Image (tube, rainbow, N blue to C red):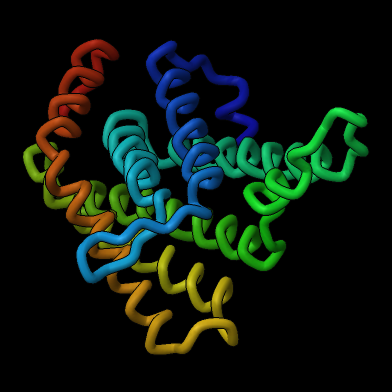
Length: 217
């Protein structure tokens, strides 16, 4: 970490970190809303959260595992900061004209158990996603197999994310059958999301390598 802090980073890498952090923050803020998708029920966070995994794949592929870890920790720190800031805002007494305290509490109050589950699942899932990408690449996978690495790392990362989040967040509240259904549904949808947007991810990796003048190996 000290070596990374002292090394020079490119503007593009900083933009990716910023986008990654924004995606995590927005996903946490909209996660409270549920959406009916045919016979399935998902959370609104599914719309934006998979983008963080796509950025994760790009950073590991172009910049390496260590810089991906740095980005993940910064994302964790930024999400934690926003959560604490929201809780502090809720705790502060409102003015006499303020009439939306209850609504704000309902939306942003959150449950410590769910917040803890979300942070732990994100940290573990993102690390597994990055580690899988790096291990497959170091094992001899060349740049032409990026698509396979991206998909497999997402399968592992999203699976770990779901395995951690839903039992911690909803164990004892929902039936284990429902929790199992949510785990499978969220992991599958997020993986399919990345598969559909894979051409954009591949193009982004190629452009990053060209602009950063990095090799393809």
